[in-house]
Image 1 (tube, each protein chain N blue to C red):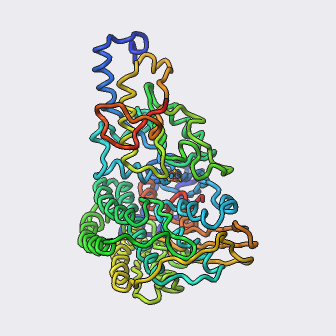
Image 2: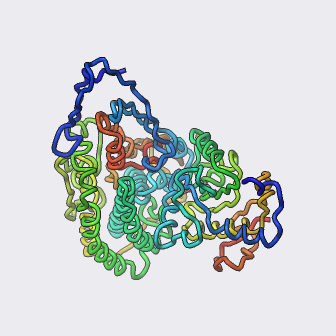
Image 3: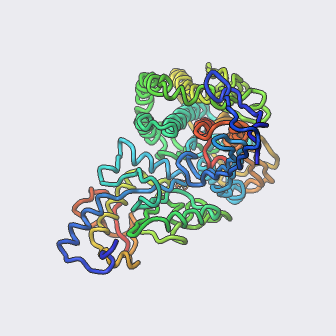
Length: 188
Length: 393
Ligand code: SF4
């Protein structure tokens, strides 16, 4: 990123810069289980998250800004997820899609399932549901875009992140760009 | 190390219409090194976290070894810790494209152990939804197989249909993927008002759209060039490996437990099982597509038969299967699904063993991949329809 990780941009430049970043998220889908089907449904014609500026055709983690982990993470799979995450260039974002990726979901007492992807990589937005509806993913994307708009790139590259967002928690989404969905919310 | 001049192994039909011919350069001292190529667990061509290790001699695959277990979630063990009502919320997730058919199998097994009479209406509705679920599943594979061969458009068509069907099923069950609509002894609730009308309309609509897939995918020259004669599976091999479902039907064997061992009310209606001839990738795909029309026929028959009446039976406070064991098989979208349910009379099963169709179908992959070229390996891999969660459980 060159100078970006050393200087704090002036406010108007930062605004424009972040605005550009949030609407061109190249997304790498880590489709693990059932939730991946709902992810695909969200990317096809009826829900179509490309209109929110998320492009699901990243050729691999090295070309991606956003990692969507959708589905059950098992202990055998965990090293691969960690490695792919580390291959992504900064600044990178992670959406944990579905109960399994959040906390283990229906397999909370299984011997082979990792209880949440946040045990191995940092997560920015949690989308709950088993499986979450495609609309929930759209909501999660919008919440993430709000977060990107607010943050400072310098801090982000230095590894300081804003608090993760959990959809459906507490107060409604305070955003002008988000649709009025009853489930929107933000963690304290 | 392998010596080119001594290589005799030629896979029949690896190029359409003719055997592969390799011209030998040099006098036989020319040596090539075998290479191992690991595809997966995160690779777009293996849809899901399936991993396969190919041994290659140049472009040609000389051996293939599937490595499974990346999606092992311990269903069989977890089922021993869930009571009979909770199990169905667990089992509809192992093959996530056929949630309804999975939970149906468990419900039927428990009912058989408890010697329970299920109301007629519930049985017909179960069939109706199971057939819709079958179409949902097949549409997904039609879209994803086309993507693996390089065509993105069919996916959008397939999901247009899938969204319509999911909308219909959601109106009855409340779920888009995992329905949890079956109960021991019947169904959760009756169908909502207007469901049958919608279902009839949708079946007519999809029937009208099926020819699009024939034109768009099956009739496509590129699709045919990539699949005709690629990865033929002889019926004897398929049967000895335990392959079932469309992959078996493509070899010409019409084994389908809806016909050979009818459960629910399948004995009272006509069930058509489309079969192929050569068992190659093209035939496998053809069977999948033809099964959509066959399922639509069944759905239309069910609409005419659906009786009135209750949809569930009164259950005791604690559902307990009596001591004993049973094996129940149903025809899942991808093949034969069997549940071996053993109970010691307690609240939870003592053992629930699953015989999942995908697990048996992938046994054919090492056979199919031997001798094919790498681009064909992708065409073969995609045409042995499997769901990774169904392999690993
Ligand atoms: S959260 Fe539910 S739907 Fe998603 S992967 Fe886990 S079990 Fe499947």
